[in-house]
Amino acid sequence: MSILCDAEIRALCEQGLLVQPYQPELVNPASLDVRLGPTLLVEKIGHHRLDPYSLEGFTEEMPFYLAPGRFVLAETVETFHVPDEYAGQFALKSSRAREGIEHLMAGYIDPGFNNSKLTLELCNARRYHPVAIWPGMRIGQVVWHRMSAVPEQSYRQTGRYNNDPAVQRSKG
Image 1: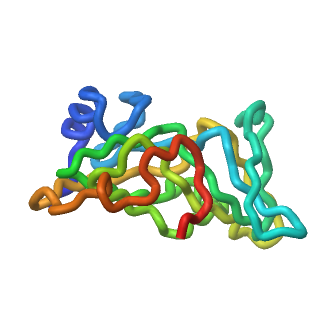
Image 2: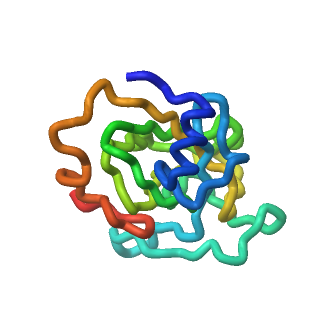
């Protein structure tokens, strides 16, 4: 496997692959930034289910504050369209980690992950202070890899989270 460079990421995105919507300013030398989408799944006292919560109306100037220790599932703005010969790895932006946001490392993007938002497992790791989040903020980046060969079965055949247009609870 080799890591894709900026020119390769840009070319694939311009063909409608990897992510939509595509914005050229999100391309880095060896990764593609992704942004926080408008919906969270949050815990509520009294039941185990995570319920939808809209971030519509929150902005960088007037953010949603994630309380210390609070866990949420979030989504990306981008919808993924990954060809079978590529895979990706999500990594939290270092600026977000330095603010106290933690990602629970379930960010592998299989070949064939298609027509879906990426669900992110986020937590405020700070002990005393909330951290600000808002829709559209650069939350992470995806490092893209070219596979050594096309897999015998892609995520199109084996995956449970394809064609998910929004953040998803566990299906497992």
